[in-house]
Image (cartoon, one colour):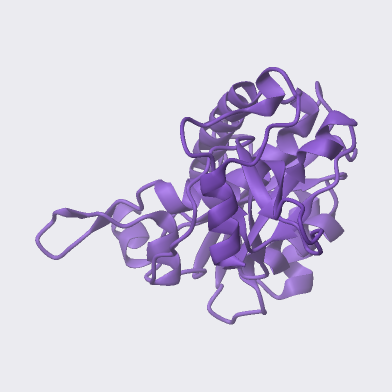
Length: 274
């Protein structure tokens, strides 16, 4: 069986995917999310985490379509734990399933180990940012980008030496250049229609990047305007132009929430970028 597994090992992105659910019973998400559907590409380790309100076949199918982009014939196998909603979604998508053996303590090793990793990271960044537990879906959306562009893919070259490839680089075959900003850190985003003599940017909490279908980054960032945060209203803003503080990272949710002033360096950056 070990020899067979080596022969069946995937050789390109989206040839084989391992999936499983995170069930959240103790803290419902801010939009009523009760679970998250986790998808791991076996070839690269690229991971997607889709918060869901229900553990249903419809939500599983939508998550897989976003992860895979347009339907690709290269996806030949999806490892799962025999959950009926996942099996139905795979059937509707035309993907082949590889269910685990029944009555096993560990049913889907890759997906389950990945879930343990991202749950630990999400817990840490929520605490570090000072945000309530109900915002765990925001942390998972942030990790869809941050985890994949920083975690190694454990690529091995012909000489048996590890290559410095991230999960994103191995999956997409290129690396992306973008701001590397902590979750919940203070940034400034460019105001669409500023006053003639007013500031060009407004403060906000950094939430990550916007990934399109197929998990592609097109240069857009997701922020939570500080004014809305202070009012207790979650209203995300998508922008391609942001500036960062000149000194150490600040986390408005962890301490005083008075509105900070836009420093001269950040103002100049927004002028140049805009």
